Image (cartoon, rainbow, N blue to C red; front, side, top):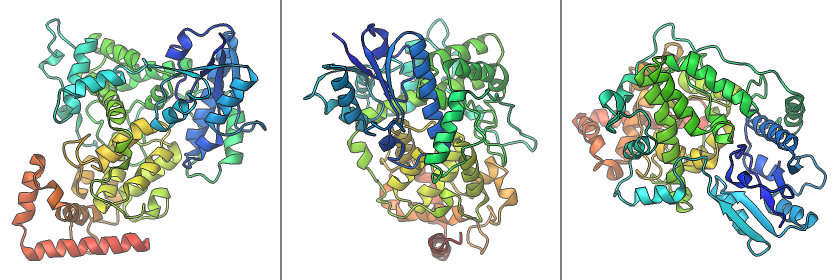
Length: 509
């Protein structure tokens, strides 16, 4: 029986479960859809990356002899939504069965499942992930409170990564995070990156995006992304050989004019399916065993993939769809215009947004401790913040963006992902970056005219959310410090925070 095999844009892997047993007469369906491209206003680079990688993958499938139905976004018969395109293909080819690998997003799974009355549906497990949904659910059932560290150890043991023969962690510790938090040195710079030769497919896509999505936030060019698995493997090998040795110590550092530093830039390729997480972990482990990289660099990088990435995906499917409705602090303030590139006197925000606009990228500390931290402290509406992160980053899909933003950055899930809010004053940013050197505001002042807004907002956040946070064991010392302030000092800080909010509201912050 001929089957229709639907491939989503983030499933560009030959090892995909729904392609492993593809038959000669089966039809592979891939779709570019306006409904998906404009569900939110995605960064032009993100759209170009997605369309170009899809078209390259489709061309390779055709070269392998597969029957492909590829729907371009400009095709005149394109219905511009998944359900109608699936039904149209099924009708055109007289097909009664759809096979797909489980979508990465709950909304897309609902679309697929809504077709059960129309045709037979088979949804295969996405075995590119290293912990399937049922396995994570079983693991999670053994804990009253979920924590990534325990999951990470479980995964290290499962895949025997960085372990001694007796099963203990190499180096005597599971986690070398304390060694990876050095502030930037004066001359810290990022490593040189690969720039791939542009294909005709890419030129066509760049023209398409320029014509149809020019109103979206972000710069389309220059465009340097890898677009095929072969190019992505080049990026991986180059990172492990030339960049990973410098990754560990300064992975939390932030430097003006250096959007990448020594981070991998591989997340877009992993999340699209061009690279597989286990092959990355194995290559990283091998580089350590050959003495090419330090243990703290290798372990820190592996933890991001084997630990955090898998954990975040597990949380998403464990808690959806209720998870999407959470807003622990009941935040309502509108996302400030400076997240979309409007002027601000805060150097850190301006720099990170500028990098995001230019590259559709910002490394994890900048996302968490600058744009995320400000949104947390200022009480920005969690839906608006999530939409921004999903729109502006090329590696962002809902399964990874939502728990990272709602849970990690905003503590909007009340502690499902993180054990405490990642709230910090301007002093943290001053320590871990050189952003403050050129800032209008002073990171060492809390209440003066030019005091860093992060400082008063930090204490105001803790004060106004005290009833929800006072029993958090990790915040006891912070609250004891707040209580030691005189009432006059507390009032002065709160008044300053209100002045910051006023500037925020009138666009002068």
